[in-house]
Image (cartoon, rainbow, N blue to C red; front, side, top):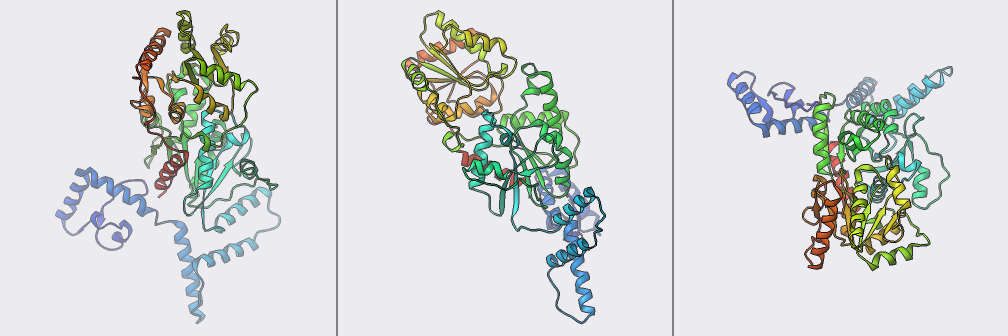
Length: 512
């Protein structure tokens, strides 16, 4: 049952107590009863799935920890009864007394390494808190906020879960670094995150069986370095989950340096050894399921793969603040002519080269439109970045805003005419729903994840050549004059609070 298998058994002895499901039982003295139950479980897929789901829940009631507690209680009770004393303590207190007794027997000459192991095990067997913990790994955010879409997701989910922790749990942000063992509580970072002061050290995490670890941030090297530690967490009863933002370095390797694809694959293979992977779109979840079937390790239990959608309200994403001196001038320029906005790190898959080439064709044909690129320089785009820096239309009809704050981005969205999402591959497409928050129309490349997010509320284009996008912009401008362009006002989108609720529900349901 603990491996997710459907289980049937005899309706005698202790078997019904263990299986815990009357529908799964048969009469062991009746061949007809046995045969009918086998036929039912093999021929009825719904019944088989019901048994498997029940079995996983039922197996959770049986643990060596509980066996030990009952054994200790039984020995204590027997001992006290033999002394003609009917009073005996609760099993939890018995275990605590036993742990303290063991601690008194530790020799003083023991090595630091052995002492650390013993201290960990004593602590692990002595439950200090009634509430279980949800560890949120924010290692990348603690070390540096790169202001990417993933960082915005991490900040937003973190904020919501800190403000609205699920009942019975304490949310604990944690982090690790490449050269350290284990994870630490991110006390200092969270104090700064909340605008508070905190002089305490970031202590190593203190975990118990039943806690949850969620790899919220994306940092390949930390996970690979902590693989053995995370495996120990899982062996000790902590449910371990990870967010998967995309499979792009594997699916589109020509857009990434070779080493990125190698480490991304190694990272994904590591994640598949744990309890569950949660994707930021249905498209990524489906792609991950196919990849795992073809490439993942064999497992005795099924790997949980689920998905949810991201939020769109930047105001509730702990936005970065600050405006440059020329912000007023730029915003005024954008409002004078139709301005097309692109948002995202400048990297090959984002389609920036096609966008720039398409707008050069528009300008050559005398179409007076502006192009705004919001994004920091990424990889393998040195030639394109050189063109942007030296372009004759720079700060006239071409604006490149590198690494701007969320506050400034909000104003850019409000001043623009239309968003262009030209990426050839995405995990979600956060700018699409952020544009919809401002009722900003969208021209998007026709890829599955954009269809999933924007549905019929975007104007889609196909083709990788510049003329394809030039034609799409011209057609959109024509339809806009006729008030016939798709509108985003009614596009389905979530707040970050709703997004965090979706995520944590998946985690808690998967931990049962």
